[in-house]
Image (cartoon, rainbow, N blue to C red; front, side):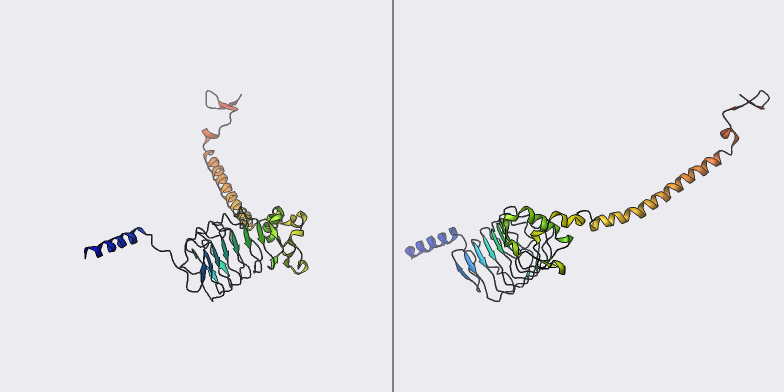
Length: 273
């Protein structure tokens, strides 16, 4: 009996010393040496039971429509995330938190219509970004500025609207031509007379009217100044009027309004100096 207890105690100690096992491979995926392939399995969301040592995650050809806040578990070693050919319409600003090591992100062939500056903020190591074949019409200022390590960007096959709203994207493209892949495929879709015109072929003169135009916030301020100035002028006039009336009321008292050039004689009569 004593001999049987020793191995049991040793086994118990070994179990206590060993770390708990990491999450296994998701049921709908194939896993091998840090690579997790969940492509084409009809998924509607990102699997949660992913190992923290995952380095590549393939989620293409599924039905994922939304990446909400913290859609991914912490994956500190993830280098590649592939999400092409889904139904992505929106990516929350906190969706990619926890993927700080990510270097390559493929979002092509989805239904994305807009991206906010916060979308890629957690991805300070990103070097390759594929936004091709979406429904992007413009990019807000700051979306690409938050990617300091970016080396390759794909933007082809989007319905870009070549109006003043495209100016932030054009400015970024003009200063980062070497980073843009398939330059001749980044084409205007609207307005009709610019359909299929390369965005990078525009010059500074094309945006002169945009650089001098007022933004929405500036218009609001401009419109607010008029009524505000009018009200201030009314109150100022009322204030001056009140002072004038008060002064005239005080001047009705003879001692206060006496002329400095008149003095009274010894008998109380006024005589000129």
